[in-house]
Image 1 (cartoon, rainbow, N blue to C red):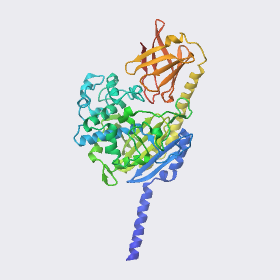
Image 2: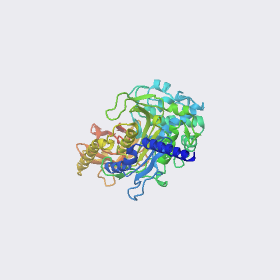
Image 3: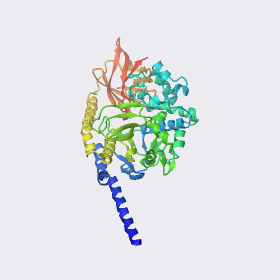
Image 4: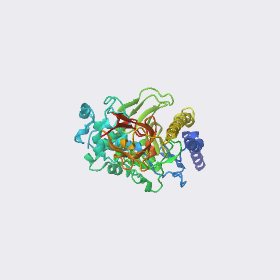
Length: 509
C-alpha cells in the first residue's frame, strides 16, 4: 500500500506540474527577459520594473536596466516610481469604501460636501455628483486646465475653485474627457466625511492593511528616498535628458502616489481575490465591484490593432474586452515616468509595469504582449509594430526643434525689447511677467502660478520667437506676440501635450 501511495502522489505531482507549466505561456518563461532587454534598447528607456501575478502567486517580479543613468544603479522590485494616474483607482476605491460604510453616496451631489462648488455651466453645477467626477464625464476636454494645475503652486481648494472657468466643449454626462481636477475634487470629499486628509485616509485604509510598506501617498521628496528611479525624457530633442521631479501633491487624488512593483503586486492580488489578501479581508467585494461598473463609454468601435471591441471607465479604472475576456487597467504619466496596472479576474492575472522615460510606448506594448500570451492571441511583436511610427514621430519632433534653433541668428525683433516687457494675464492661469534677459538679447517669462517655471524667448524671424522652458518636460515652441496699434497686446503660450492640449492666451495688462 505504501508503494502504491507514493506512486499515486508522484503521478498527481506530475499532473499538477504539467498544469502549472501550461498556465505559464512560453513567452513568459522563455522570452520575456530578452524581449524587455531589447525593448529598453529600442525605446531608449533607462529602467523598467515589472510584476506578473497569476492564480494567487507571483510569476515574475524583477527589474531591468538602471534607475540612474549616471550612477548605473540597477532597477529592482523595490525601486520607487511615480505611478501618477494609477493613483486614481485608490481614490475611487476609497470613496466606494466610504459609500459602503454609509458615510456618503456616490450619487450625492458634490455641493453637499464642497460648499459653493460650481462648474462653467449652472445646470451642470446643480446636478454634478461624485460619480460624475470619478467618471470623467463633466464635458470638458482631456487634460483641460492641466497647464494651470500641473506642478503649480495652487492648493487643492484653489484648483477646485478654478474649475468653474473650464468651458466644456462636450455635453455633461455624455462626452468623455479625462479630468484630473475632477479627481482632486472627489478626493477632497474624503476629509469632509472621514475627518482625514485624502493622503492619510488612503494610507490608513488601503496601503497599510495591504502591507505596502514602501508606498507613499505624496510624491514630494521622492528623490531623497532610497532606491528611487530618476525621471527622463527624449521629447523635443531625441536625447535622453533627466528631468526634475514633479511635485503634484496638490493633485494628490489624481496622481501623487509613489510605489514599486513589489507593493503593487499586493494591490493586484487583492483586486483578483475579491478584496482579500493572503486570506485576510481587506475590502468587501461590493466595494471593488462598484469601482468596475461602466459609467462612461470611452470606445464603442473595435480597435484596428488590438482585440478590443468596447472600452469604458468606472471609478478610477478603465475596462474593456480583450480577446473575449474582461480586463481592467489604467496608465499613469508623470514627467519622466509612464506606468501601468492591469488585472483580468477571469484569468486570475495581474500585471504592473513601471518605467522612467515618459516618451515611449513600450510600457504599453509590453502589457499587451503579456495579455496576448495569456489570453491566446496569435504572436505579433507589439513593440516592433509600434516602434516604427513612434520613431518617425520622434524624428519629426526633433527636426522641428532643430529648425527652430537654426532660425535663432541674433536678429533684432521689430520693436525694442522694452516694448515686450510687462505683465500678461490669462483668466484661468493668472499672471506671467515678461522681461529682458540679463544680457538684454532676449526675453524671459516668469510663470507666477508655478514655483520654479520660467522660459527664455529668443527672436527668430517673421515676428516669431523660440520659446524654451527651463523644464524640458514643458517643451520648446515657436510663438508670436499679437499687436494692436503697433503695441504688444497679447501672446499665446502652450506646453507639451503630455501636460495639456490647449494653448493659453495671455493679454498684456
